[in-house]
Length: 222
Image (cartoon, rainbow, N blue to C red):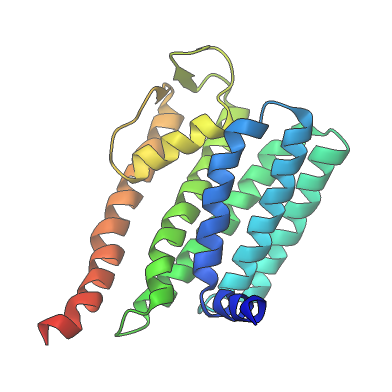
């Protein structure tokens, strides 16, 4: 009975599942990204995130076939990178994943703005949308670094390519407007992308989160 109840809960709150899987990925990446086996496991986790996100899009005004059409080639590219050792496919998979996560972000925002009353799943969607934005910009940073090596510097090993965890940290720092951390964009293209990330983060907090908070407080005001 408890197992069936847990399944029913995940079906009612897919955004909570997506948020939990993404947070798990953020915590797991630093432990696994430095080894080949760990990278394979992280690629598998990325596929899980894609599948959970596709399921989530079905609950939103977004088109499911668009998310599936993006997810399938991404999974193929991730499989080729992991199993066939084709690192040169990284820019292609990162570009597609950025588009996928931006589309899922737009679908979730439309889902949250469609109602006049904030539900529990929409409150989970606030966090899930923010993490989707962070993942989308991280993939853009990965793409930028692949096309323009050395565009991101850090205090530790400044000439080495920045890892996924470092670029994810930069993405969260920019979107939350809490600073830039020790990873610094040094080229004009990287700085332009960082500026867009800061703008998107501020607008998300100002327009989407504030509206949802207003809907949450509306019954109290009444």
